[in-house]
Length: 226
Image 1 (cartoon, rainbow, N blue to C red):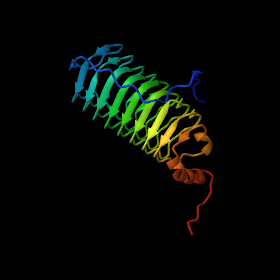
Image 2: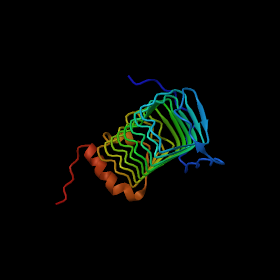
Image 3: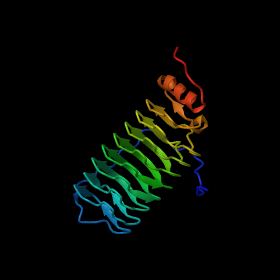
Image 4: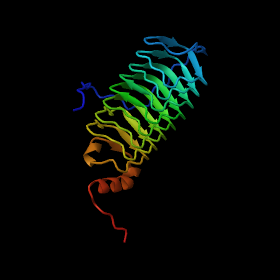
């Protein structure tokens, strides 16, 4: 049985995310993040933090570039006004993680897991997020652009404030997710499963032909081109 999760009654916004507030300047990060540590206006450039474990770490106005956090365990991590570029966050795991005004660009995040968390004003662009997991996570003003999300798991997620543009969502899991008002444009949704999982979603009119094939396949309907 999935864990219980209280949903907010208000409709989250699917507007364009607010960008991170830029820091006045950044300094090189001094070392590994410590549990419950707070880190502000630091540059994590060309650093290897793979496999690290720390709980309740808070990053504010930090910059990550070519930062390797693959396989790290950062439960209840908080990122506010942060920018992540060309980094490797594959298989990073965080239960209860919170991202606010964060941009993720051109990064490898295969298997990234944020469970029972919150994303607000987040933009992910040209990121590899295949096999990522967002179970029971809430999305508000979140925009995925040109991302590989094949096999991503959004079970029980509140996606009412999410937008997907030119994303590969092949084989995505949407069981018990709330897609009321979730917007899709130019996305691949092959193998999505039951058409009922898309109830409430908003598709651009140019996507209707492709969507008809997805729904037909899910319902076991064959399309004959002869």
